[in-house]
Image (cartoon, rainbow, N blue to C red; front, side, top):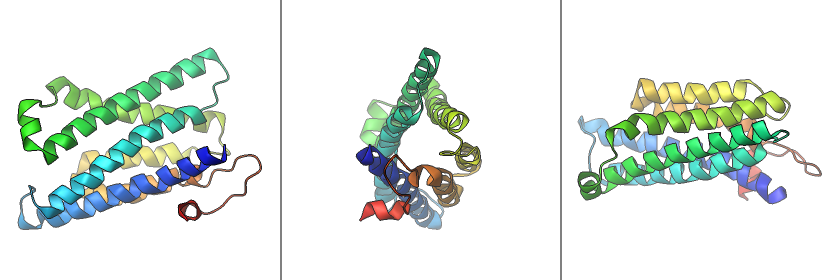
Length: 194
């Protein structure tokens, strides 16, 4: 249980941090009026790729954190996890296409998945967070999934808001990062990085 807590804390810090770095590098890359291949573009997308690999792991961790008291809860949590993983894979496909244009040209993400993937990812992750907040409000207050929803909205409004959205995401995940388990003391999320 202690290693699961450490993993959760690490993911709650690393994912927003990687997204923040991606957003800042994206802004730097776009200062010439164009987003495209170059050091800032490639490095930013490497951070973005890492963030979505970790998002996939995070969705699995969230599934394990949702109390599965009934078969219906277990089924709903499992379906939300599958949706979140499916969406994360769609994001990874697009990011890899951005990093490797040849891949994008030879195997582009099919049009219907361009819409379905992000929606599945968002709905899967938000469903798991809402389920957890509904069953364990002391461990995950209602405002946490609300802030994660705001994170998604900010990115949908304008990709230049990714740095701000990353900070909102970190705030939304803070209760999970500071989450207590039996026999452990509450500590700073950054303490787990030592």
